[in-house]
Length: 130
Image 1 (tube, rainbow, N blue to C red):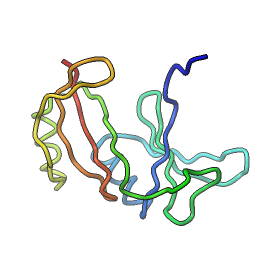
Image 2: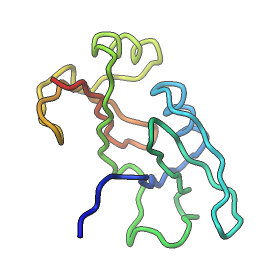
Image 3: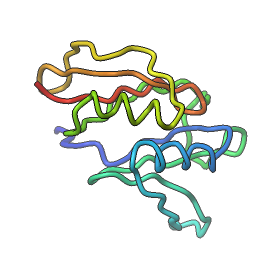
Protein backbone atom coordinates (compact mmCIF):
# COMPACT_ATOMS: atom_id res chain seq x y z
CA UNK A 1 0.00 0.00 0.00
CA UNK A 2 1.40 3.39 -1.01
CA UNK A 3 0.08 6.82 -1.93
CA UNK A 4 1.56 8.29 -5.10
CA UNK A 5 0.78 12.02 -5.29
CA UNK A 6 -1.00 14.96 -3.70
CA UNK A 7 -4.26 15.80 -5.50
CA UNK A 8 -5.42 18.77 -3.44
CA UNK A 9 -5.21 20.36 -0.03
CA UNK A 10 -7.55 22.67 1.86
CA UNK A 11 -6.82 26.12 3.24
CA UNK A 12 -9.14 27.69 5.77
CA UNK A 13 -9.27 31.44 5.12
CA UNK A 14 -11.00 34.54 6.49
CA UNK A 15 -11.76 36.09 3.09
CA UNK A 16 -12.08 33.87 0.03
CA UNK A 17 -11.95 36.76 -2.44
CA UNK A 18 -8.78 38.23 -0.89
CA UNK A 19 -7.22 34.77 -1.00
CA UNK A 20 -8.21 34.30 -4.66
CA UNK A 21 -6.81 37.76 -5.51
CA UNK A 22 -3.46 36.86 -3.93
CA UNK A 23 -3.04 33.36 -5.32
CA UNK A 24 -4.31 34.26 -8.80
CA UNK A 25 -2.98 37.82 -9.10
CA UNK A 26 0.38 37.25 -7.43
CA UNK A 27 1.14 33.53 -7.86
CA UNK A 28 -0.57 33.00 -11.22
CA UNK A 29 -3.06 30.33 -10.16
CA UNK A 30 -6.56 30.05 -11.63
CA UNK A 31 -9.86 30.36 -9.77
CA UNK A 32 -12.14 27.36 -10.19
CA UNK A 33 -15.76 27.09 -9.11
CA UNK A 34 -16.82 23.49 -8.62
CA UNK A 35 -19.81 21.57 -7.36
CA UNK A 36 -19.09 18.44 -5.34
CA UNK A 37 -21.61 15.62 -5.03
CA UNK A 38 -23.56 17.49 -2.32
CA UNK A 39 -24.45 20.22 -4.86
CA UNK A 40 -22.85 23.14 -3.02
CA UNK A 41 -20.68 25.60 -4.92
CA UNK A 42 -17.09 25.85 -3.78
CA UNK A 43 -13.96 27.75 -4.76
CA UNK A 44 -10.57 26.26 -5.53
CA UNK A 45 -7.23 27.50 -6.82
CA UNK A 46 -5.81 25.46 -9.72
CA UNK A 47 -2.17 25.23 -10.73
CA UNK A 48 -0.51 22.48 -12.74
CA UNK A 49 -2.19 19.19 -11.86
CA UNK A 50 -3.07 20.28 -8.31
CA UNK A 51 -5.58 22.47 -6.57
CA UNK A 52 -6.17 24.16 -3.25
CA UNK A 53 -9.76 24.04 -2.02
CA UNK A 54 -10.81 27.04 0.06
CA UNK A 55 -12.94 26.84 3.20
CA UNK A 56 -14.28 29.99 4.84
CA UNK A 57 -13.26 30.13 8.50
CA UNK A 58 -16.27 29.31 10.63
CA UNK A 59 -18.20 27.87 7.68
CA UNK A 60 -15.99 24.94 6.69
CA UNK A 61 -17.35 22.05 4.68
CA UNK A 62 -17.57 18.55 6.18
CA UNK A 63 -15.50 16.60 6.64
CA UNK A 64 -12.86 19.03 7.79
CA UNK A 65 -9.69 19.14 9.84
CA UNK A 66 -10.19 18.60 13.55
CA UNK A 67 -9.09 22.17 14.33
CA UNK A 68 -9.24 24.24 11.12
CA UNK A 69 -7.49 27.59 11.46
CA UNK A 70 -6.57 30.29 9.02
CA UNK A 71 -2.91 31.21 8.86
CA UNK A 72 -1.63 27.80 9.96
CA UNK A 73 -0.37 26.70 6.52
CA UNK A 74 3.23 26.43 5.39
CA UNK A 75 3.32 25.73 1.64
CA UNK A 76 6.17 25.37 -0.84
CA UNK A 77 5.52 26.01 -4.54
CA UNK A 78 8.01 25.16 -7.28
CA UNK A 79 8.71 27.54 -10.15
CA UNK A 80 11.01 27.75 -13.14
CA UNK A 81 11.05 31.56 -13.00
CA UNK A 82 14.28 32.96 -11.52
CA UNK A 83 13.89 34.11 -7.93
CA UNK A 84 15.22 37.59 -8.82
CA UNK A 85 12.18 38.01 -11.05
CA UNK A 86 9.92 36.83 -8.22
CA UNK A 87 11.51 39.38 -5.87
CA UNK A 88 10.67 42.17 -8.34
CA UNK A 89 7.19 40.73 -8.92
CA UNK A 90 6.44 40.63 -5.20
CA UNK A 91 7.69 44.22 -4.77
CA UNK A 92 5.46 45.36 -7.66
CA UNK A 93 2.46 43.74 -5.93
CA UNK A 94 3.31 45.16 -2.51
CA UNK A 95 4.02 41.72 -1.06
CA UNK A 96 6.87 41.89 1.47
CA UNK A 97 9.55 39.21 1.11
CA UNK A 98 10.21 37.83 4.60
CA UNK A 99 13.28 35.80 3.68
CA UNK A 100 15.29 36.51 0.51
CA UNK A 101 16.84 33.65 -1.50
CA UNK A 102 18.13 30.94 0.81
CA UNK A 103 19.22 27.34 0.28
CA UNK A 104 16.69 24.72 1.39
CA UNK A 105 16.04 21.03 0.82
CA UNK A 106 12.85 19.91 -0.91
CA UNK A 107 11.24 16.55 -1.60
CA UNK A 108 13.61 15.76 -4.47
CA UNK A 109 16.76 17.65 -3.48
CA UNK A 110 18.22 21.14 -3.14
CA UNK A 111 16.08 24.25 -3.54
CA UNK A 112 16.66 27.98 -3.53
CA UNK A 113 13.67 29.62 -1.86
CA UNK A 114 12.11 32.93 -0.95
CA UNK A 115 9.33 33.39 1.59
CA UNK A 116 6.24 35.59 1.68
CA UNK A 117 2.87 35.44 3.44
CA UNK A 118 -0.63 35.25 2.00
CA UNK A 119 -3.50 37.42 3.31
CA UNK A 120 -4.17 35.00 6.20
CA UNK A 121 -0.52 34.82 7.22
CA UNK A 122 0.18 31.39 5.75
CA UNK A 123 3.87 31.00 5.00
CA UNK A 124 4.45 30.73 1.26
CA UNK A 125 7.78 29.42 -0.04
CA UNK A 126 8.52 29.92 -3.73
CA UNK A 127 11.39 27.71 -4.86
CA UNK A 128 13.54 26.72 -7.80
CA UNK A 129 15.26 23.36 -7.90
CA UNK A 130 19.01 23.09 -7.90
